[in-house]
Image: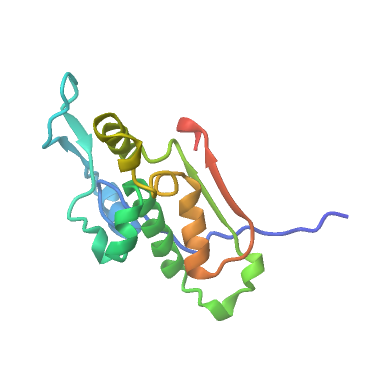
Length: 166
């Protein structure tokens, strides 16, 4: 006999070029607003001059400075969006059994910003100058791990990296 269990989406969170919350992003979509614009930084030898980036975003409004310094921007974004979704759900710690709540996160790739930065440090200054936070601060499963720890979720913890299919 199979036990029927439901997976329920109870809240939404988003950081996007359209806005720094799911509601703001959705409202912009409904208005037909584009988050794509001419980029304001140079990429040598790259013919592309447009893109989407977060606007009016200060990570320190969402995460403690000590934590945000140690993790790649993509981890910051994932944790912040997950926290928004949890807040949007209206759930409190008294509403669920921690062992029955898990976190699953998917990403196309890990922390390219940290990988590039530490590669330059390695080439210029050697291995001893590479941050000890490099690996834990750039891997995909840090998002689901940090969210689980912060909210005391003790159920399954899963991260998927499968390029564009996530």
